[in-house]
Image (cartoon, rainbow, N blue to C red):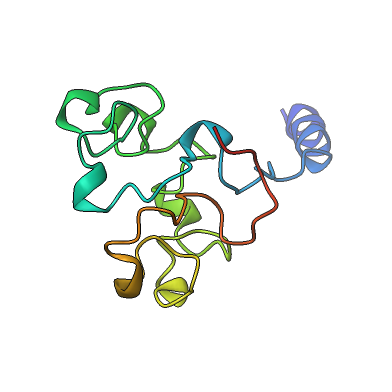
Length: 118
């Protein structure tokens, strides 16, 4: 019994924690501000009621825990996430109150580098 326990501990000692890459999956990016009222019914806007269950919708309940989803609670404090409270007034953030009616601000990572836009 003790030998099995030692073998299990040795086997588990080599296993490290899983490091998932927190980021912004390109399938959730848009070239426009998804939060402007004029873009609400755009065909690929995740806030469009017709797209509530689309596979590339970050607000789809199925995608809630997807590692690349910016709305995932794990990614909430990612530096490039628009939903990060520290980025509320970032000039490129579509959620910035100054960008409320600016449709040219893309829904994309704020660092501008990760992922690609559609």
